[in-house]
Image (tube, rainbow over all chains, first blue to last red; front, side, top):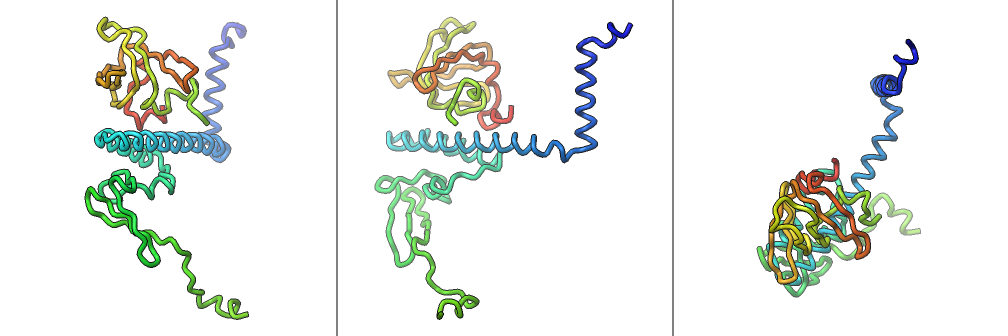
Length: 148
Length: 89
């Protein structure tokens, strides 16, 4: 009787029930599993974003604006869905208004103005300013240390 | 981590070389080229003459070429979902 009742499927379902019980009773034990899964997903998302930017740049240099735009759209959608940030060096190359991929000399103008660099998107006219000098002003708290 | 057969289903399909292996539609069978765009149910393929063709994912079988060496045969039904949703599947 037992040999029939405790066949493989029954054991398997026991295992699943036990696992589910553990999950409800001791959720902290599963933290590692979730973190691992999330990290894997984020890693994949960043890889896909980088790949899409590569493709978008290639298409933009081939003068196929529509496709380039579509790839950036997809990359942004992936970033938003999985809370993966678009890497900083890529984010700097996007127009913040029309999300065009900026290629200096083609659809962007880069000028140095005092302490910051201005990138002008030639499609929509947006100026994107970025400082390129570390601020030199000593903080008032640290004044004593600086004088020494 | 590169694109491999194990993570192909979750990775980016755009830019890969593709061949339609099996299809119930005889005019689509044997088409090849690079993937140019992807929607929930379709793949847009561009061939060497720069002609675009959109092919349904459902019911077709594709062969993807990864990194110029590995060939993977994939059932199109497993690819059905929006490109940004495919990571979590």
